[in-house]
Image (cartoon, rainbow, N blue to C red; front, side, top):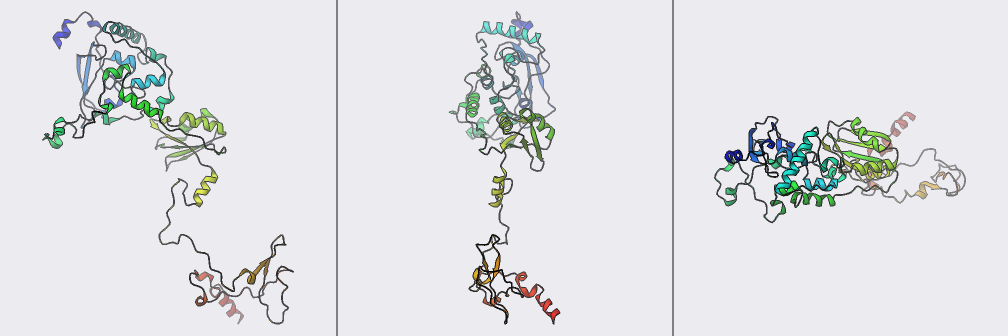
Length: 422
């Protein structure tokens, strides 16, 4: 390799010599202490075919060794990682990002045109501060709704796992747990994800991962506003422990006036009530499935009306929407007491339908010597001076009637009052 590179010295001043690679968080790994090997002019870039500095490292325990695949000039042109070639801002393939931003970057593919284009882009990168994208990507809008919905907010370290052991697939691996490769069933060869090309990913054409993400974006659910126009409250879930009231207010105040923000730390959720329904609909449309605060994707839903909450509580549901289970040992509902022959409403009380106050007329037997009361519905009510007769004894009550000690008039002060009268 050194001999072939040493003979090609006509354009050696444009070879890359860097001190640190351009990597995403996933490829860098979760270990904050990484030992990297650096090889100056170690390989040719797989895109522009120019020698560049190759870095090699292990991203974590039980992970495979990774290395840079393209030079930093090609990485800065597309704002992608040097290893996985995914966008550094959204973590998505280049084809998905360009589709979301509605840009078309026609990078030449022939050797002469590609070299000329790369030199011009490298000159433009040197004239800029080096932190902002260049070319068509630098002129594109800053964000897109589709990209915010598909963006990955946390590293996906599962992508750094070792390759599948070919000996294990054949049934010949004898290393067991000491084998550094994965002992899993390989991907179906008919699966489109099994055929991936690094050049197709860089140019943004025929990328199976991008096609899968674009198909997912077309079938993503929508948040329809409720029919009840009085609802102007949004439910925000998945807050975590570090998100505060001020951070939610700083994001949602742009959509309209906020009436109240209720933060429930125990459930890690919040309820944001807007002053108008229009502001709530705008906030739900702009935040559903694309609200990211402190690196966390938050859940946005519509709140429920007070009538729906009270109905669910009556039906046995809690405020969180889960059904309440009956307590063991307690009856679910008390049966109504059966009516006895002498406990009809006609014998104890009569309601006068012609009276506006529906006075209670008790038709009870009077002591001897008193005139009989008028027929029901006529005259003022007549009350028995000794109160209503006691209920029948327990032996005469029909089966199924529930009796409590507090219903016994002999235990409610009657016995004490009679003794006092004696």
